[in-house]
Each structure stands twice: as structure tokens, then as C-alpha cells.
Picture 1 (tube, rainbow, N blue to C red):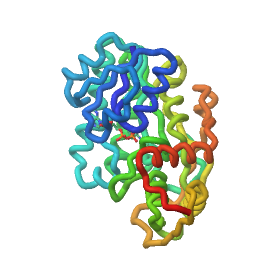
Picture 2 (picture 1 turned 135 degrees about the horizontal axis):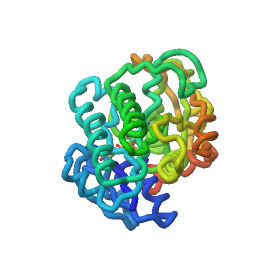
Picture 3 (picture 1 turned 90 degrees about the vertical axis):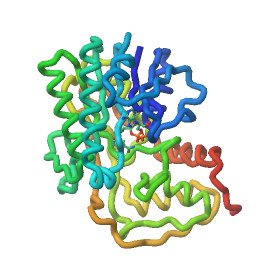
Picture 4 (picture 1 turned 90 degrees about the horizontal axis):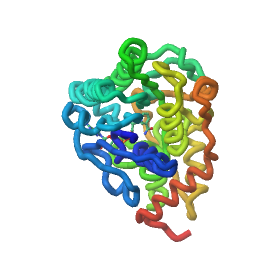
Length: 313
Ligand SMILES: NC(=O)c1ccc[n+]([C@@H]2O[C@H](COP(=O)([O-])OP(=O)(O)OC[C@H]3O[C@@H](n4cnc5c(N)ncnc54)[C@H](O)[C@@H]3O)[C@@H](O)[C@H]2O)c1
């Protein structure tokens, strides 16, 4: 039995889907704060609605579980600046509840979600797992703490934990909502609705986009194998694309003309970000495989199916 915390969310639901395809039994622990039942539609899984902050819910969720993918978290960087205590309660204390619950239940291995946010805006590309970290938000600090607990549990507490530093994940079911929603679902939603795409700054800031299907595969590989306990691995596409290039790609992926507008840069926006994925490749045997254009087309198609308006070309 596998447990996926946050399994009703974006990355979680793709991880659950992959596990089901491989024939595993899956339980999800999710409080449905940003995730939804719809994301799990058609998947034969056991959904437990509850919080990772609740030790009783975690203990129930761990019964009979051998492998855990821990994804449940509060995920907004600006919100973490507003409410650092709430972020600590879920992302650090909640993670500790999951790791303790797993240890008590005799779980074999956990993979958990860290983030490229912990590299901050220090120069130097590509980012290696040995590059210095520079946590510029409580969210980043939460993720760094998770990585350190991964090491402690693996070294001295009898539970193997692998931490994966995701870069900019994209794909179907990603929520574009809110002023700080991820750029790809926002661009796709605007483009399909015939709205102008807003690009902050000159658009030459670079990002490393990784398909959610590649991330789901990394989660499953990290939690199934026996390599890399206590270690941290970058999970990115391993190449950089500028926001201007992305806007052009999104424009090409929808069937009508798209217009762009530049606005003032957002404070704190990182200039460039790109992963080296050599360590994950060497130790976990994982590499990004998705073709960007095909993954973007699949994302556009999902938004169309979901009811995104198509403006006649
Ligand atoms: N999407 C990205 O680009 C990205 C990048 C780096 C790291 N991450 C990390 O990946 C993980 C998954 O993120 P996502 O993008 O799928 O976001 P998401 O919001 O879709 O998923 C988070 C899930 O956790 C659940 N959740 C939140 N608080 C909970 C709690 N207290 N108890 C139980 N469930 C709770 C939510 O309902 C949701 O289903 C997070 O840990 C996030 O920090 C995501």
C-alpha cells in the first residue's frame, strides 16, 4: 500500500494516477484545501480527508503502508511571507508528523517535495544540489527544514527519506487561480479566453519547466528504490526557457492570435533558474523525458476540455 499526502492536488493526482497504472493500492491523505475530489475522478483510490497536522489522522493513514510520497503543503511564497506561523505549522510541523507517523508504522521509504525556491536569487547556473542555498521566504525555509529532517531520519532514525527539489512543474490540473498562480496555466487560460498575456519585466527571466508526468515518475522512483536515502535531488527539465519564449510557445499552441503586454517587474522575481539533473540521473536513474511542446499541447487540451473559451481564429 502507498500513501500519497496531498494526493488530491496537482502533482499528487498525477502521482496517484501513475501508481494505479503500475497496479499499486493507493491511499490519499488530503484536507482538500487546494486539492479536490475532481482531480481523483475515475481513479480507484482510498481518499481520507484529514490534515497532516493531526497525528491521529496521520496514524490512521499510515496503517499497512510501505511507501509514502509526501506532497501535502501550503504552496504560496507570498502567502508564506504574510503568515509564516501557518506555513511552519503545515509545512514543517506537518511534515514532521508525517515522518514520525511513517517511522512508527514501519514504513520503508518516503519521498518528499522540496523546491528550487531554496536556491533563491544567488547567481550561478545550472543549480547543483551542492550549490549554496539562500532561503528568501518562509516557504523556502520550510522546504530547507524538510530536507534536513530527511537527512536526520535517514541517518539516525531508521526511516529512509529522499527529498526532491522540483523546479517549475506544469501540466493538466494545475490551478491558475490567484495573483501568484503559476505562469503556464495562467498564460494558457488567458490565451484561450482571448485575453492579453501579461509579462512582468522584460520577459527575459529564465525558468526551468518540468512536466508533471516526469515529476510523478521521479516521486515513484525515489520512493520505490533503495538509493539516495537522506539525499536531495533536483527534479527539473534541465533546460531554461525565457518567459518571452514561453509566451510565444503558448501563442503557437492555441488556434488564434495572442497579444502580449509588459508590466513592471515583480519584486523578488528570480532572474534565471535551471536545474542540473545529473545527480538524479546517476543515483535514482531518473531523467526528464517529456517533450515540452507535447506536454504544453496536453495542458492546453486539458484547459479546453475543462471549458476554457476558444476564441474563433
Ligand atoms: N507546482 C510546483 O511547481 C511546485 C514546485 C516546487 C515544489 N512543489 C511542492 O509540491 C507539492 C505539491 O504541490 P502542488 O503544486 O501539487 O500543489 P497543490 O496545492 O495542488 O497540492 C497540495 C495538496 O496538499 C493538500 N494540503 C494542503 N495542506 C494540507 C494539510 N494540512 N493536510 C493534508 N493535505 C493538505 C492540498 O489540499 C492539495 O491537495 C507541495 O509540497 C509543493 O510545495 C510544487
